[in-house]
Image 1 (tube, helix red, strand yellow):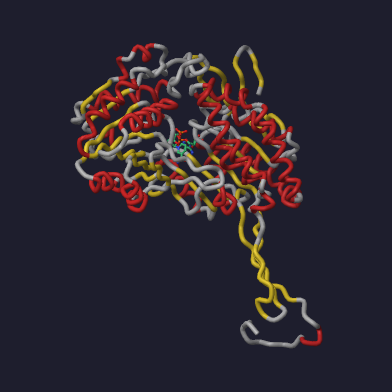
Image 2 (image 1 turned 180 degrees about the vertical axis):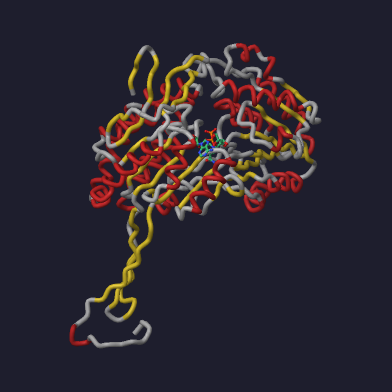
Length: 502
Ligand code: NAD
């Protein structure tokens, strides 16, 4: 990273050092709070991606051979360094993403959990052993790293999502190339520097900045063995299809439309607190944000009243200004796109209960938009069908539990779904019925802890394995089965029959 004539230049991290691009392509990184440019990020050419892959490939054999205790020790040191630098990482996130500082600190805390999980790698990579599978024959399974693996991450969690991937990938003995979002690339370089300080050998972790061109080269490069992707559904689908065509192992997590079903017996205050927190936190730019409240029976009117009351108190402003609870959106184009859904909602037949465009907060800068609430929203309306990814909450009214579950299950996305109720039997039925990968019972954002794995169903995940936790370890390793015999030479003989248990 260099600073020339007041513009920060954000470049790649290859082989343990900053490498400036010669591609001639770059993008502007904005400070969403001011609407001013904050830096310029290099976009890698295919040649620069190849350089990173070559560096990762060179580093792989000795990293793979490093004792488990050494890998674990580096993860412990990395954990300490990230912990000590929480605030610096969070500030970098706030400056480029716009989320409030406490929210960014929360992101770093959740990322730390993934490093903590990876510290236990010696235990996680224990294989299995069957003594005497046949007379004098033992069978065992070991898991080995894949080689060079790559991760492509979205703008909305510039530290946590990279940590979902890199902690396990590296601890398992792979070398890793991160292609972060070009909108908030600085956190990736802070993590790179902390990994270096933790003692990670050069080349085991690399960052290539860039856009589609870098992603396409990573996918087609023959030395890249696996792709982890997190982003919007259309791109996740195309990354999955293309990586599969190249014969790669791939997990591609996509977008979401998370429903929160509120049954008539729910505690209204608690449901309203949860809906407001989960819909407007991080300005709705979370893949686990609640975007639709499905109000069952007569609960809609009192619930909407309680939600409005809470919305009116949300403090909106720059993320570094203390006391603010919601910041700006990532770009002005995205802000205008989100505002467009609110503008079109009434024509589609929805009721605009609160129009965030008129909120004084919307005048704070070109990336700011107040919170909106839409009622009488139905499938078929754009505000229901599309992932808005902004501070807009929709309410859909249904008469029965069956209608509510039907609506959730017919939605093409299946990341998270929540139910609010005081009835344990209804909650258990929901857990059984609902087609979503992560379910909350009186919990609006059920992001699993790091010792479970994260992933949605349907159009929210392409691939078989979920991310981080035990499935992450599985994704970044492959199984090898060994059948072993140490025979007494006296018992050895030629036998052309198929091996059988004797
Ligand atoms: P995005 O799909 O625009 O970008 C994601 C990554 O793909 C970025 O690194 C970007 O540079 C790269 N990219 C962009 N265009 C590409 C192309 N044509 N080909 C290949 N790569 C390309 O997503 P975003 O706007 O950065 O992030 C928001 C989206 O991510 C939302 O849809 C959100 O729901 C989703 N998301 C999902 C999860 C999850 O776990 N399911 C988590 C976080 C975010």
